[in-house]
Length: 357
Image (cartoon, rainbow, N blue to C red; front, side, top):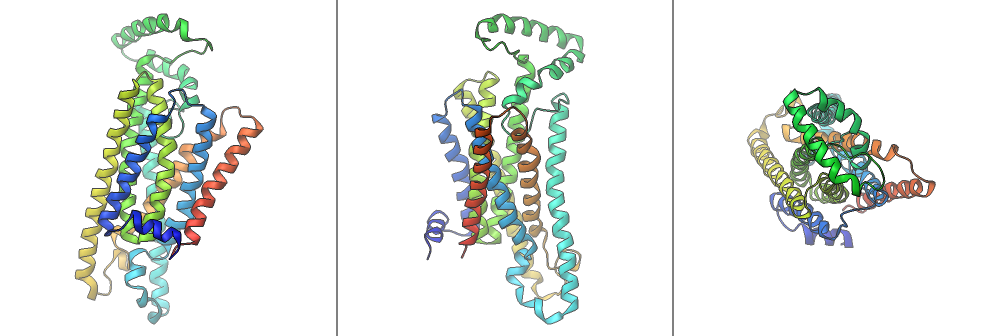
């Protein structure tokens, strides 16, 4: 038994239900615990490096674990692998259809995150930046102008209140604005923070669903998804925490807020377990019928959770986070550091995938 499988066996000793709850607990509690040690003014550069590492890990999970598993036939592939060979062309046809459904599932996950992102940005006054995801450092400053325009277009009484607030805010801030950068009005950056918490909650919910689906798929897929989500959660939590501090939350309150969003993960895991348990029971009932899955394939609804997770992770990594790594000035060393970090993130996932038992 390799060291890796021993470690995974130690961390995840139980049934898929127990394991997915355990994984969610590790992922929710540990990054929150780390926040105690994060300086309130974390260097954007070191956060970007962490984020690059996380992108590598997420994409590694997508390309090396989730997609191969999804196209490998999911649960059907494990339980019904022996159907495969006997039917010749009929089964190839079924597999083709199965791949189409898996592909649609991937797109579904991608689209869901796109729709959520779009909605959040609309609620946030349509500025192009307020990333639901990502590091949120530069976005706050760059989005100021659009946000102020938007704020001024709102109803006049709102406008009065904003102006009052802006006045007091600028008076207080004259001293601490050494860099001379304009601070966003309190109300809008507060809104960004709350929207970010909402997005975070939703995102954790989908993470929870992914945890459950992965552990029900197989112990190996479960463990690797847990590792990927874990790597992604750390910089993500730190980034959100920094954003909350930036929006004037106290350290205590920011930590409590981050902790609350972890509730989303447990909720998602519970929903995921429920879906999977129902799926397992229906599969047992219909075992004897030949076409027991979706559209005459061997796929169950629950088998689409993994492809959807893959699509969601793809969106988060590429659209949510990478644009943050693309904009902003960086020196060559920082760019090299980010490239290396992304490569290492992928390498970690590849190592885990390679040694899977």
